Length: 233
Ligand code: CA
View 1: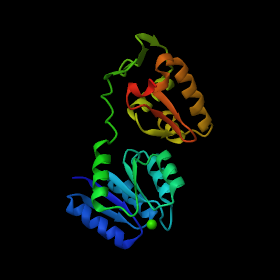
View 2 (view 1 turned 120 degrees about the vertical axis):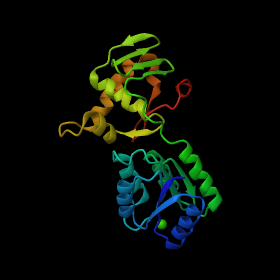
View 3 (view 1 turned 90 degrees about the vertical axis):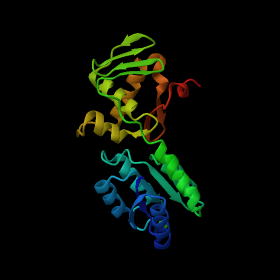
């Protein structure tokens, strides 16, 4: 089935989870510390990380942030495990890109259902590099680097094109400014995350009728909508 990484410092709970996930047919990796979990995620590339929020070394939110910023681990779905009363951290978990959460105490059955749901809606694979994309009012010819909105061709710089395609390929997932900097610009000393905001603003202006496909996630970054209908409200 799937390869699942459990990051949980409570040994009894970790064992119960390991046992039940194996019974359900999954391959299981387990870590009791955040740093160990990060290392396993980078080395083993699991299909899903089950991440406890309260860990002795790194917080679950920090682990989630690092996973979502690493190019090799960014696409791995994260299911957060929280205790009651951690409402704020729960929100932060989502802003950092956690895909779902369960609140302790939870039943094993509930957890297995959540895991199945998260695995089902994994990030879509990027389209073929030369594919023609039709998304609502937007049309992208990836091979020719041309973009149309409502049938009208718009003029994008090479950087704006790359930014648009990067956001599109990760639609429905929040992209942090620093992740965009890494992937669109490459790391350069003279560039700050403000640059990302400036370019997204300009890209949106050029996208006219399709501008709402790129959403701002306050304090975190940007997200391309999952479907064109989502931007119509
Ligand atoms: Ca814990």
